Length: 305
Image (cartoon, rainbow, N blue to C red; front, side, top):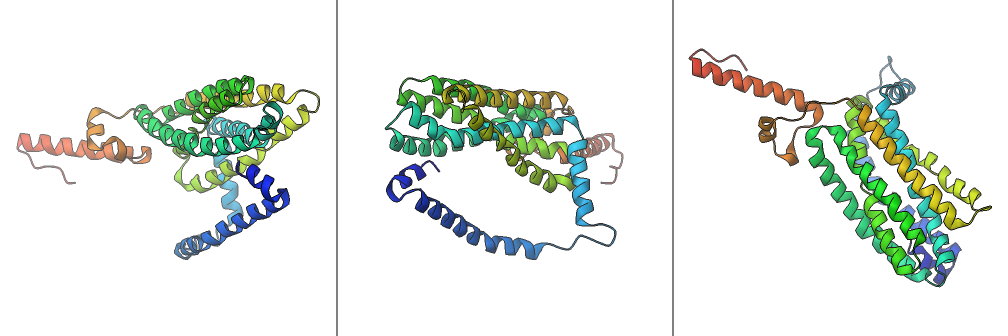
């Protein structure tokens, strides 16, 4: 998206929008074979006793009314979406205002930052959350709590930077802290809800982007009466810190679970540990193995498997 600034300078904004729309159409056409294959594998699940409206209503009820931790997790996501969309909309206008004549350099730097820092943050955040999950799934949220807090600090430093190079350096670190939240959030959301509503919960999570779009509108309204840097310095860190706080509340309210024992950790490697929903079956199987071993030592017949 940042490279569209360079494209706009060459062919104009109207042609740039046409090219973006054409790319979107191509991507949609490329997804049609996948959607057809998936649709052919689906089996009709609705009967005369249920309807899609009833299923949707039941999913929404379970998502919003099941646990307070789920509601705080969704609130965290709304605030995080708001911060990200605010940066996406207002970062380029701020660069034009604070560093005039550096638009082309910004387009290249922003594209590289999004690719390198964004990808690195997402991968490292997922790996770190997997390590933290050994003490319980809710500990995954430590990653977005710390990452978004650092992102708020780095964003403030980027806005206050006097040189363009310093601003891009702090923006790079801001992306590293801000993009680590997605994987842990989806994992914890699915962990807190029953499998029957995972699809509905994912759909609700995706629609939270609509609420996040209110943040750029708020910035646009505020910058009419206040300087843009001051508004960006206030709103974006507030959204980041609010999201981090809400993630922390989710971590406190989420039901605790018994950490894996050393024997269970040896049963499955960290990269192939059983999911939380299958953990009870794993422990039951380990008890059966222990009973069989004791039975063999006592010389009595082993219990049926």
